[in-house]
Length: 110
Image (cartoon, rainbow, N blue to C red):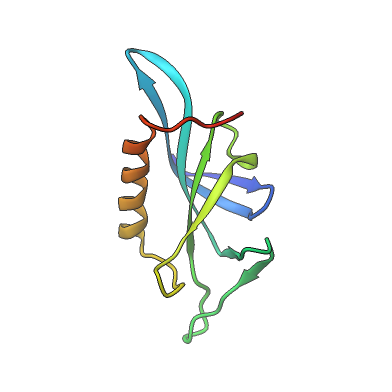
């Protein structure tokens, strides 16, 4: 399920996978998604592209969450290591799986 989206704060992103919590066959207003972008948004919501030493551009992974499936206006978290470096895809997927498990206990405000 790869799809492009234009997030209102991050900009162009590729939505890699999304999840909606279902309890007893009833859809819940709890959505999480994993997306990637070449843009890094810092705490001041400034967008920047970070070049690698070999001239390429870093890929950044974001966790998106919302009470609806319109991820263009959802909340987001930039996934980085403790030192601020971009996480790997494997690490981003692990965080995504953990987020799926926690949706049972979370409530997202519309």
